[in-house]
Length: 271
Image (tube, rainbow, N blue to C red):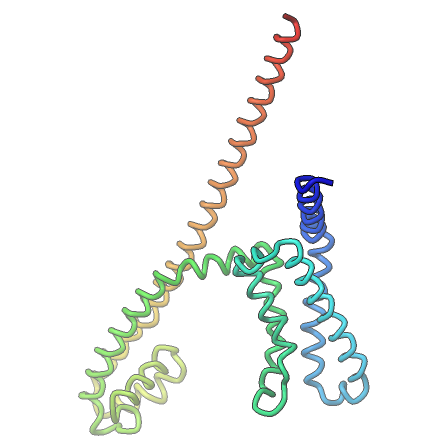
């Protein structure tokens, strides 16, 4: 057997594995196992349930973990080091690999991180993956919006500290306290009864500051966040559509070329 033939058979073997792993029933089974595993990890937090069904739940968890490990090993065998060039594959490798870190002593907290396996649904469900890709694509724009928020918070904190510090040091005693108070105001959590109205008893026109701050920090900036994310998701969808159209054009061109080649063959055979 020649080296070329051996390489061809090896490539075919890898392609068969890749095709099998991408099959819809395999992916759907993995999705079901991820959901079941997430439910098991939730049930393990119930001490009564663990007292009765603990060994069975732990065994089932280990079986599902074994299936996940097998999936990753098979994909690495088929793809080689290319597997680690896919960010989603690296993510799967990490969240599954967390289970093998000794969760004792100072590392006991890592046991709780096993629930991160449910995040593998993002990789398995196409619609979720597109949303997350859109969110990741929006990070540069979100960074600009976050910078704008920091500027607004800094300016508002300096103003509020100078205005209200003397009578309300528990809320506006220094820049840090003021920033935290304004964050509470921005979330609209008890801002009127707990903060604004007591201040207005001493500073009747303080409502102007709070209303302007809420309009800018809560409504305008929050909508900017949404706009950046939606714009990124829309751009990703448009790119997917363009890629599909491009692939369709390539397939149509290849079909046309095959037809032309067939026609040329027929003409040559007639001669």
